[in-house]
Image (cartoon, rainbow, N blue to C red; front, side, top):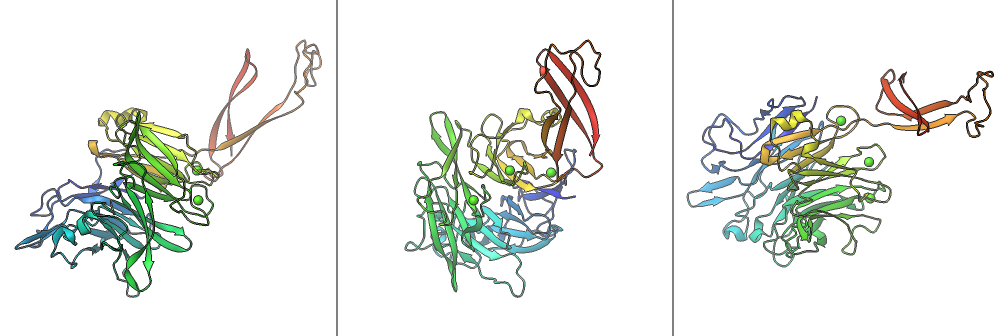
Length: 476
Ligand SMILES: [Ca+2]
Ligand SMILES: [Ca+2]
Ligand SMILES: [Ca+2]
């Protein structure tokens, strides 16, 4: 049975000499409320080394899993290296194996120039965001370098003898950096093949150009600094466009599309926007007109995004959008389709929709502050969604229910019934008008196995004043 992994950046651990250093919890999938256990990520038995400050380092601010069989990544973006006359906020990430054993430490800003402090790598804050790509690339967002211009670091998580051990990153100098100082590039990261067969590394810069920007990088032959492929611009000042990112092929046409959140977008009655960029053979360009969804006033709609996998088994991936400050927090579910995202949400999940057992335990708020989806946790064939509610120290696992599409049809000659003609084939002497027909139900399900009993409730309605209600049990 898989586990849920939950970052808890203000937790304290048993490591001596640390205070609120943060932790990651492993939670079995159960209906119990308090059976999560801390994972031992760092060397917990000894105090931290002399040159390290772990207090308030926020370990668990970022937790990413590649899924079953893959690596897990957990970061502490406020981790500090110190000496007699300096303290550098470099940030650190840890990769864990699939058994959640410690695999490696990752410090992309270690041993880089810091003489000019924040004007170089002194306050990197590596691990503010992170991702592990399908091809085992570690992508670490780092909004601090070069006066909060920020960048994206990439390495190979496998780190075997043959793997490239170079840290690749986006250019930071005035002449070739894609964004200005104070852009916070690296607040969010993702990766994917947006342009042909080569992987792009994508970073959100929510303060870039005032509106927020999103930067696409790719590897530069023989060099460790990336080439900038594309910069997308937000549309409204201070909307924090690029605060969240999610790649998914919404229309299943083979071209990876990109979803960008701008949770502080506002206009009258509106709070938060999400932009959907459909890709094509030409790739996403500055001219690509995105589809825009908006949320309710001050809801911070788009603060979190999650690709859900295919919730309804129609062949198109589906999307969850969090609006953590709409009432007690709301999660919107949108469905993909051949024509792109269907703009009406298919589901709006509010705190009051949750079972009473859950709500009575805790007064949930900020529901939807973080989202993680796309993995089937209870092996029912449907991907599930984990919803974080940091303001109430809770996560809620929403398990998808299997669905079946039922095709119904009626067989028999009932199209021309003469109400004056009494009797029927079955009972020729009846004094009533009678007729017979067969009501048929058909469904395909890849989820239900043979031998599963399903209960089908149906209603046959001849006319509104006459109803037959039956219940049958059928064996699949
Ligand atoms: Ca597509
Ligand atoms: Ca779908
Ligand atoms: Ca499931």
